[in-house]
Length: 282
Image (cartoon, rainbow, N blue to C red):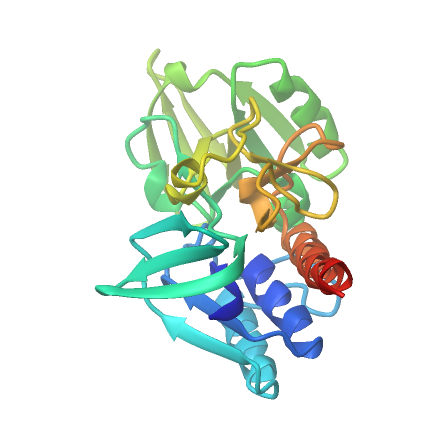
């Protein structure tokens, strides 16, 4: 029986495991090897690591976790989670692993507008976060492929960064082509726009079915409903990273720094959970 099983080997899960390791809680981190930023070669807006490859960040974190004897890492995809009395059961590779608590940090899956060529540029010259990728297009034209009211706000935010911001309805773009130094956006009316990069608004869904399997409350945003410490509607299950939607925020926060912070807070809540149990037992 583990104290905690952390599902997800991205920044939120890794930070949760680090915090739990430092508090000597027996922790298992399960990593499927699939990451939301798996197509990104340089992560930005993370203090002391601005521009570092996310894969390198994960490797550095794993090396740090190796110093903590109570933390174990397994590279495997979990197929199902369920409750069995006071235990939470994680099924993987035909085996059942048991824990008193779970930290879900499995992230989101992005569904992009169905524009030919768009997905191939996702995480490189097409992004969704101006804080993480906007500066790399500085002084050059960019496009916002979005037709909802948020597009105009995003365009104004990018105003000081880009030389020009074009707001385009994705339905009016027939193809996205990579050029030597940017993108060519082919429109249905036959015109072509040359830009350094583009920002798209994907539809994001839970990457894993575990929240549904455990019957957790889901916000209208699609994120697992949590409090500020990652506590879900189940007292022994916590959620962190961009799969979680803390009630005090307008939506899930998609950034490395926010994911790391939420992983730490969820782990703190787990430690407090065990401390409270021990008080009750005494």
